[in-house]
Image 1 (cartoon, rainbow, N blue to C red):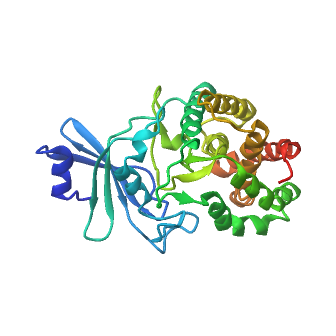
Image 2 (image 1 turned 180 degrees about the vertical axis):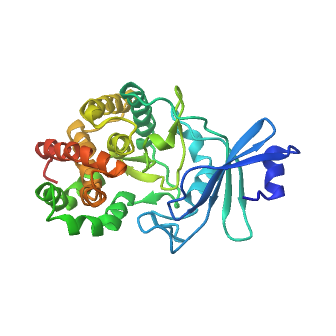
Length: 327
């Protein structure tokens, strides 16, 4: 990875670059790569963002600013200053945003450091901070035209092909019942108070043992209260940050803390409707998991964790059913 001299000087001054370390996998089509760049005692994160129409089919990129998967959204979020107002959460400080001759964008950010040790208590603290941020912004939502809108619906549409072929497999009755309620759940999501959402809110994107720094704002936009909080629990289990056996405890810790965070802001909301979105929308979001997990098999590390979490999602949906209200 060759760092352009002009970018290096803008970020590090005269210090010479001493190391460039690749970080993670560039799965989403709009991510060309992520690196930690060191220059003397300083370091920074370089994320290269570009449009790739032939990229990952589950995580596409679009040139349309109105599309939930618009490829330039994260640089715009930093340039707009919107991410400066998400307290008590925070985003890494933007150091440089540079358009490159090949059409990509180089986004330079402060290094968020290491992940904390994830515990039920720490994730509850994160959830309360999320509730405080989203409760406040639900009362005066941002309106920038490039913010994603309808992201949750677009996510489901992209994954329908992985849901429907498995409706005759294990957990078929449960998956069928959840998928059959898709329109009703989406109506509840649309009717809920709308706020500023991250849409990929899970431990891999969260840093800090105390104050929580959130990275990867590529999908940020307007969505229902409860969506990000619901996402936090199963993704913590799917990716091995929390054991499946702690799922019920984690769910209630996140729910209690997130609800308390909303209350802290004085937001007026229907608790039953919020609980329905928190449970039912999360179960709906992951209806593609059973088929994919069984295709991987229990011997696969990731597939095995997903299989352990499926009963938790089924329980979420069953618990949500009595909460639904006619619209």
